[in-house]
Length: 347
Image 1 (cartoon, rainbow, N blue to C red):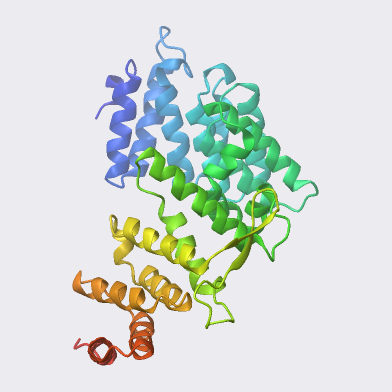
Image 2 (image 1 turned 180 degrees about the vertical axis):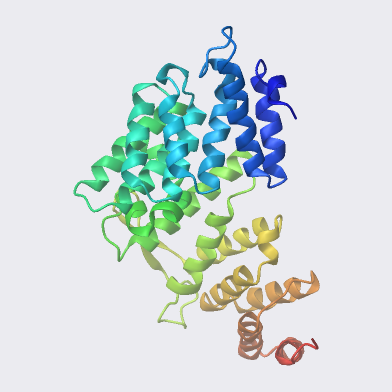
C-alpha cells in the first residue's frame, strides 16, 4: 500500500499497521509508518506529530519494542509532543520499557502520565512491577502512592482497589508485596487472611449474581486441603480458629468449611475450572481432610462421570475415603480407576 494514501488518515494508517501486525509483518508496518511520516513532512498542510498520527504513533512505538528496536521506540515516544500523548502512548511505552527491564524508564513514563492526567490501571500495574524490581528503600509507600492514583480512576478507595485486584497483584508483584499491601504483615497467618478474602469475594459474587473468580475458588479448596487438617479426628465439628479483619479470633467449624468447599466446587463446575485436574486434586484432598468422606467419594465419582481427567492423587483420596466408610463398591470403582490411570497409554 502506498504511504501517500495514509498521510491524511490516521485511522487508515493505524488499521493497516494492525493488519500487518496480525500477519506478523511487523517490519512492513513500521516501514509504512515512517514512510507516511516522511510523506507528510513534505506537505505543508500536515504537521508531523500532529493528532492526525497519534494512534499510528502509539502503534509504531509498540511495534518497535516488539522487534527489539527499543532505542528507536523510546526516541519516538519522546518525539511526540506531550500534549498529544494519550493514555495508550504511556501504556505502550511502559510495556515496552518493562519488556527490556528498563525499570527507571518505566517510572519516568509513569511520572509523566501522572502530570498529564493519563494514568491507567495497566500503566499503574506495570509501574508497581518496576518498583518491586529495583533495589531501593520505601517500596511499600511507593506502591501505595501508585495505588492511590489508580484508585481515583474508578472512584474506589485504595484498600478496595487492592482487595478487588489482590490475586492479580500477587501474580505481578509476588506474594510478599501483595500481602503487605493488604496489611497482612505476619506471613504465618497470611494464608488465613487469603482464605477470609476469598470467602468475602465469594459472598460478594453471590450477591451480585456473577460467577466467582477462579482464584477465590482455588484458594478455598487449597486452604481446606493444606490448612484445615484437624488433629482431633474424633470430633465431628473440629473447630478451627481464624482471625477476622479486626484481628479478633473466631471459630469456624469443620462442617462450615465443608459447605464452603462444596460451594466452591459447585461454582467451579459452572466453568472449565471444575475440569482441571489440580482443582479436583485439591477439592478431593480437602474434603477428606475435613472428614467429609462421603462427599469426597461423590465428588470424585461425579468428576469421573463428567469425563474430567482425574489424577491418581484424587483417586487415592476417594479410595481411602471409601475404605474408611466401608463402601466396597466405591472402593472397587476407585481401585479400577487408579489401575487405569497407572496403565501407560499407547503412543
